[in-house]
Amino acid sequence: MIELSNIEKYYGDYHALRDVSCQIKKGEFFSLLGPSGSGKTTLLRAIAGFEGIDSGAVMIGGQSMAGVPPNKRPTNMVFQSYAIFPHMNVAQNVAYGLRAQRLSKTQTAEMVNKSLDKVGLAGYGERAAHALSGGQRQRVALARALILKPKVLLLDEPLSALDRKLREEMQSELRHLQRSLGITFVLVTHDQEEALTMSDRVAVMFEGQIAQLGTPQSLYKRPTSKRVAQFFGSMNILKAEVRAAQNGVVITQIEGLGVAEIPQDLAPDIQGSSVCVGVRPELMTVLDDDQDAYDKETPAVVTDIEYRGELTYYDVKFEGLDTPVVVSMRNTTNREIKKIGQQVRIGWENASAVLLLDQ
Amino acid sequence: MSKRILTIFMVVFVLFLYAPTLLLPIFAFNDSTFIAFPLSGFTFDWFASLGAAVELRGAAINSLIIASISAVTATTLALLASSATVRYRFPGKGIMIGAIMVPMFLPEIVIGVSLLTVVLLAGFQLSIYTIIMGHTLICTPFSIAILRSSFQQLDPSMEEASLDLGESRFSTFRRVTLPLIMPGVISSLLIAFTISLDEFVIAFFLSGTEPTLPVYIWSQLRFPRKIPSVMALGTLLLLLSICLLTLSEIFRRRSARRLGQKDNGGAW
Image 1: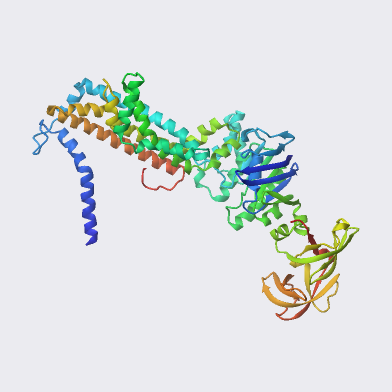
Image 2: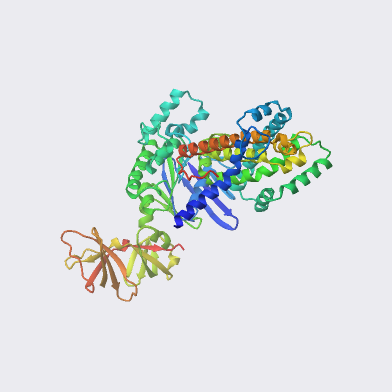
């Protein structure tokens, strides 16, 4: 649906987008995720036509968008501030883009009502724009964009102005809306949880570049760089040395933990190099005495405990490792919480570790 | 104690501001050609005499034409300059804004003399058009100051949303930008109109045979007999100004309420 190839963008000396290429499929919920200043909004605005690009190409539906102004593009946008026109009521806002279609009054009213119904604002047509709450403004912005049946809906941090509860509600609502309409959604967000829960695929951006692109699961489970790994949840980063790489398995000596056979397909010439390995806290287990079903087992000492209700976070110290490693355990009815200073055994799997090779 | 001093200060301050203006209507209705107390009687004669003064009517019409055209021209120019300078970055922008704003601080006599020189050198006749030129020059900085702040308060995503929803730049201006900055446009028109209406120095230099109202009033002051008529005329102008101010304030409040903005009390 959208094809971005080798996009470069400068603001004066500032290199805002660096060789960005990616394809967004039809009917997909695609997110651009990154911290502020990562270029995600600039990229979205380049797709919408509000920002020119210095080189590269934006294609939408197979057509080049070079020189096509925003009003001629098959995209519509929900702005971060929602940009609800304050001098019009809700119905006038929603009907705003319909003028070019020269519909009769009754046709327009019918479409507006349908559109408002879709976003859960039936009967709000006569409300003044300034009498709306944040959540309602966002729904009006959605209705106003969707009434034009765009091929692509662009959303610029649409949930960042809402409080937590409303944000979670809107996340699932947006997801349902996207599924039922089948329109391609491109969402910009700095909230990794939001990106994970809503998207089919996510492009993680840092400093104007796409650092990694994939499904939420693949990004969480198999990050390729330290930065991506630490952006999603928490990740223990350990130094390691590659012993050998063959048949889709990389044999690695991890500091503190020991030898792991990490399932990852790499060329054999990586042998001997120093690398970083990431291990998620929830993929390691503080073993009780009778449990012994793990690939690997390493002794350690508990140095700190953080009880968070659903989970308990242990800081454990492995032999030969200065910094503590975080291990999280689900609190079940029978599981006893360890004590600080207690000797424990940490169970882990070969697949718990992931190689973080990209800079 | 200090509260009482403040109250007295305020009363004296307001008296100082408005007492001279209040003399205008008092003597406009006084049945005597001498501007002095005690008042001698009540009369409408001075107002009636205005109706018969053909020159005065001509001057008033000139002033209204000049003020209207200057206000519209200054506001239009200011709209263009403000929208460009608020939204775009371009080389020499700071210098340009400075250059446009300078006439606000230049002595009017300097502007008047230099414009007169230019007009005479270029071989133009002095007419109401030369005055319009001068007034547009001095009104534009005020209009720009007002409209720049309107544009600065305008969320740029409003216009982007309109473009995004399929409208062209021109219809975006008509359907979104203009309605949203309308309070600023009205303020600009009124301010420019008022400045032009009572401006004397430039009008005096550039007026030729068609005086404006202030120039006409000045010429009448040489004849003591005419002073009460001038007072009557001043009273009418005072009423007109109060009406205009009230109108603009009503309009400003209504549009602020309509746009859901907080009313910040002051007009400009």
